[in-house]
Amino acid sequence: MDLISIFPAFWTAGADTATGTTDLVPSVQDVVDTMGEEVKQTSSILSRIFQPILDKLPSLIFAVLFLLIGMFLVKQIMRILKRAFNRSNMDGIMSSFIRSVAKIILYVLLIVIALSILDVPMDSIVAVIASAGVAIGLALKDSLSNLAGGFIILFSKPLKEGDTIEADGVMGKVEAITILYTRIVTVDNKTVFIPNGVVASGKIINYTDKETRRVDLNFGISYEDDIDAARAVLLDEVKAAPESLDAPAPKVVVLSHDESAVTLQLQVWTKSEDYWPLHYRLLESVKKAFDAKGISIPYPQMDVHLPENTSNSDK
Image: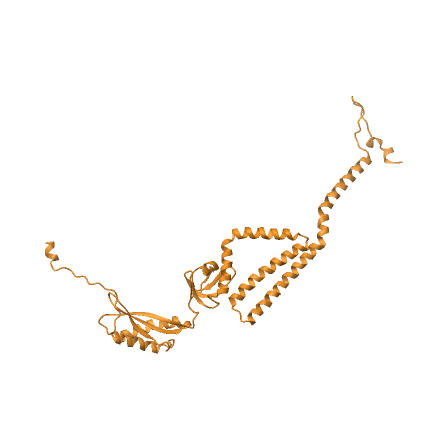
């Protein structure tokens, strides 16, 4: 005895209406068939969604492993390049710049190879890279000029690591040249980043490119003082300064006849690194020596002459 024979009213029931008899409850077979169709459709949709992923899963896993291994190899290559550049005594600025550019190129190649493993057409990869390059170039045109400026600085070599330079109105020691910026540390220990494009296209004064520099100092004496006596005092102070060089020989020349003083210029040579110590030493020692010898350093003054009949004319 089955369920249909026991409870026939629950499975097939009819109701007399004006138009006839209508089934109120579907049969079990209809329900099973409907559920089967729904499951089949759902399975088909899920299959269409996940089947491509399942097909690409081995390639995806291999691409991820390739990226991880490739990133490790890139780090090792960077270390090898750094050691090689250090052994070759390459300038630190050029070494850092070349390694930065090489790192970017290696990572781009790594990504391209990983995409090719995933069967992405190479034409599409090249087209995307070209389009991205154009878009980035338009958006970052100033940065590209800085990149080009970095190459110009490295290959023309107007400066090197450790040089004291003046560029874009900033004076300091060159610490590094990155892809986009030249890093300078000023004498008061401030770090200044100047765009490479500005450095390459502007005026660069390199204070330490040569081994020696000449210190030029101007001293004014009054018209009543003896020029030869003042010259002797200046040369004596140069001889007493340990930073001064004997060759080329120091000398004192009359630079100009000014309104309030005769200006003497002291010219003395020194090593580039001793420029400022000698500069400050002579400014102090010469002032003390002039005071001891009675040589005055006049300050600007103006003589005002009043007519004698000014008071009478006012009356």
